[in-house]
Length: 107
Image (cartoon, rainbow, N blue to C red; front, side):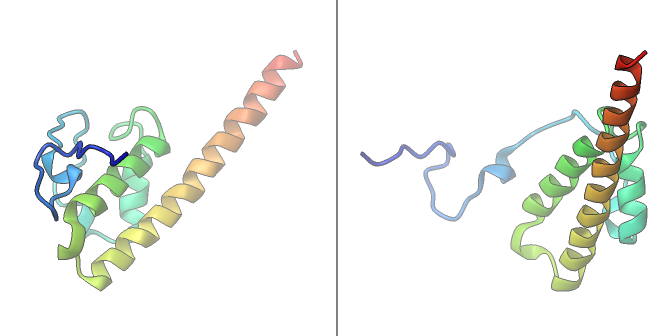
């Protein structure tokens, strides 16, 4: 049985990400044009991503998806590097939380 087209447009070539309207996060204007280290640092901050680096990772992935084929190879490479740095921060923070929870549980 063929799957129904859930995109709402019914036209081939249009992606779901173009239809998303969200106002849940507010990264600073021009952030995604900066260097990878700055992007990762800002997106990992609690001010921009109150739920932690994972939230920042979702914002960055969303931006890359939204830009689509219009993103140059050089810019995409910078954003992918920022994702790698953010993933390292995310892994580091989850390991710290596990250590903290383990230490609190042994008290």
